[in-house]
Length: 313
Ligand SMILES: [Zn+2]
Picture 1 (cartoon, rainbow, N blue to C red):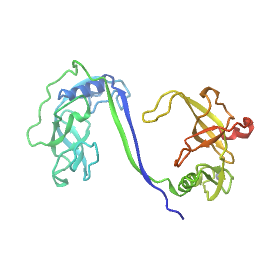
Picture 2: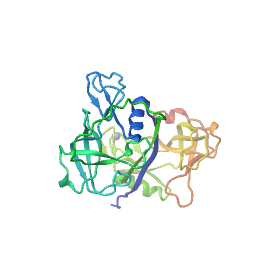
Picture 3: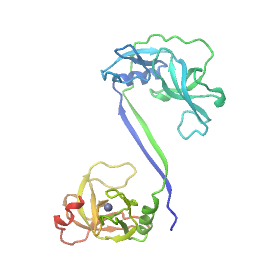
Picture 4: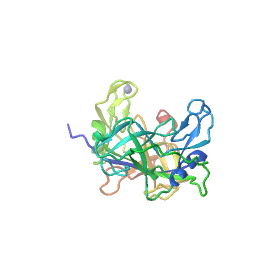
């Protein structure tokens, strides 16, 4: 059996969100070195604050300042910090119930080692030198031997409040497609589409996942399909994706390759976007050295009859 493939896979995107009154006050407060919670109808103070009471679902907006000191309620040691984590040396992830709060906030605790951390230990906020209205305005927590610091009773009203944030999201994987898709990808490198047939319902899966989700059986019989196929359905993309050098509008389609029991995705080129239609016959276009088709283009054949692909939509 050939070696199963694996490769690094990074999923990364900037997530832009507006804050609403409660999160706006919380993050603006951090910028001003003030920690705000929100009080529920039952008198509990939630830090970090939320917009709706988790018990009654009532909208809540009664802001209350809590202290920058607190107590660790639970923790875990992070022996190998990753990129963009709060500290670049080993640290503890801690839940801290700040003095005056009834719930705990997740953050990092700067400590020399796990022996220096325990549930119940007293800590205080270490503020970041430069603050912009983000959770990272708290650089981390640090051990605190002194008395609780009293909150000043801030109203939660600020000039120039933060109203939105851009949170970069990034996930680093080592992705392995498994036995079935490894065979599929290796065949694609030779410009062949190889699916797998279910031994029970006879459906040919392209790309194959190694099992038939309907019958629950392993698929092992390899079946070459295509290269021609039929557009079963499609959409016109009008939003340009970052890092993708394709002019909009363009068409992204479901394409049922001849012999396949379901459709795969591909971009349609070689035809004006407003002339793409269900039933259009297409073939893959490969660029030099590519491991998968760049796009699909019309073959010039007559459109497929709806009945030939109605089960593949
Ligand atoms: Zn099946």
